[in-house]
Image (cartoon, rainbow, N blue to C red; front, side, top):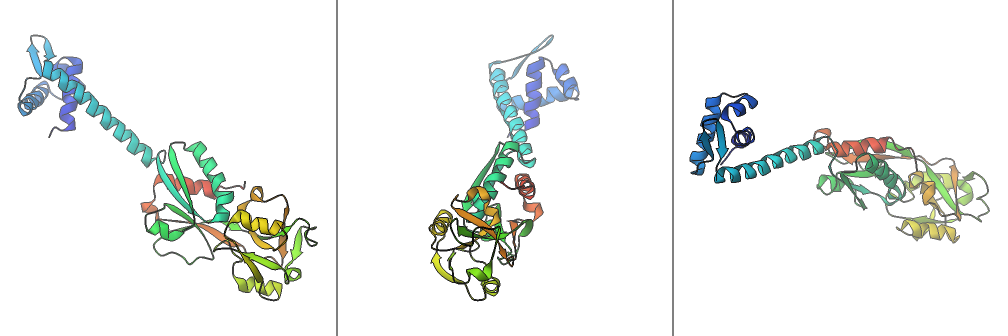
Length: 292
């Protein structure tokens, strides 16, 4: 099999038309270049250059070899460039798993900022799943909360503390202020959803309400849950990570009194040696998130 250095010598001899000139360009001796071309000719079984009194000229076979060598060498340069781009985080793909409320504002905004800085990196989002997708090689980064068990074998990078608010319909008698006493909502119907977009640790909510919440509706669809609130048939916990931009105009967000403990949001990723530069760049973007 021909090696890359032999093709480089062949290319320089063809470009410069001289063994001596090629030797000088490659920091070799003229006899070493001559031997390299002779070895190529023996391997190919055909003459590649006419030896002339002043320099050399490619034969027909030599011209074909030069054309193909240029193609191969250009391909190697392209390969090195592409690998360097991946190593620097300028190319590649990052697959993200997120829970629904994180996918409404947080992830889109982070993707927008990241894509502006790294347009050649492909981003993809799957809603659902979790840290197990990273362990299975199906995702590069998964958003999880402090309500999740810590996944073995992964790093958890803390991103933000997610304040939990309460969503009431606009015309609700308790929706006029900036906050609401949870005890006053004890008799309300509550809307719950799948983990982690749920009522959270029920013991903490129950203590604030003075009784376990009366869960009347189960809905995993983020828009559907807001629709139920807007219709006045229930109230729900609204995580701040969803962003005010994702809120229906006929819903009010209020701070609960007493405050519900914030949940911390983490990025679950492979340990540092196994993370690509593109994943590291997306992590930096998420850590710099300033809100929608």
